[in-house]
Amino acid sequence: MQFHFDRYTLNARLAPMLITLMPIGLAIISLFPASSSSMGLIIGAVSYCGLLVLLSNLGRDLGQKKEKSLFKKWGGIPTTTMLDPVKSDMTPEQLEAIHSRLEKLTAIPRPESDENKDAVYEAWTTYLRTNTRGQDNGQFRLVLTESINYGFRRNLYGLRWIGFWMAIISLGIILGEHSVIALADPDPWCEDLLDMRPAAKAATLITTCTALVFLCVVREKWVKMAATDYAKHLLESTFILDKKEETQEKP
Image 1 (cartoon, rainbow, N blue to C red):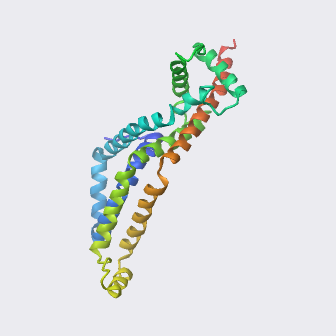
Image 2: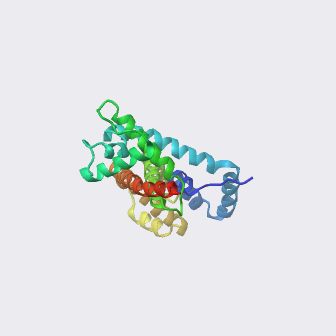
Image 3: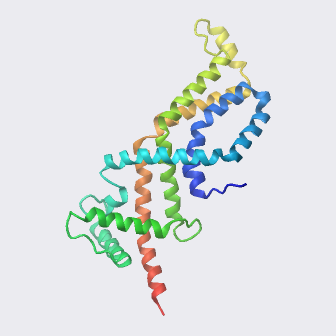
């Protein structure tokens, strides 16, 4: 039995979970270097039995859970916010062009009051997502790329504190096992640090960097940047959809 993962699943769902679990794997490999090949076989067998499917779904679920609080904090879904003349940072001319095309494409009239504007904007956004989804090499490839970028950051943000503490725990395991932390006697500390196996040194460096990335890089602002870029590319696809629609209508 084989599992198929598309580009979005691999990069936006699975990659964040693997990054989160990487420090633990490095700690195990550094402690048992002679068993690295055996560990690789075990990990490969477990993955083949469905671990990758589980990890991709866990990463997505945690990311989506965090996404709800982010949207609430941002004042709404970025795409919907950009369509709102009151909240959008787009020019009136750009918004007018996009509204006109979406009204034509969806047959859903633009909102005339504040009561139903959110429902209309959400319907327009759903139309855009549905009609631009899954084109890796097509005319909407940039939309897919930005969607993957946002999904990756959102899911990694959902795993932020889990990843940070797993990296710290893994770092403690590596350093503790190799007797690096011996603050009372600095000479043995230096000697043990230099005598660490290459695998342990590499694991220490990568695990430390992973913890710093989760702490300093994977933040709300980092996620919002990707969400905004995705929203802009999604709205810009309106012009391509409009041309595509006109071409199909010609006899």
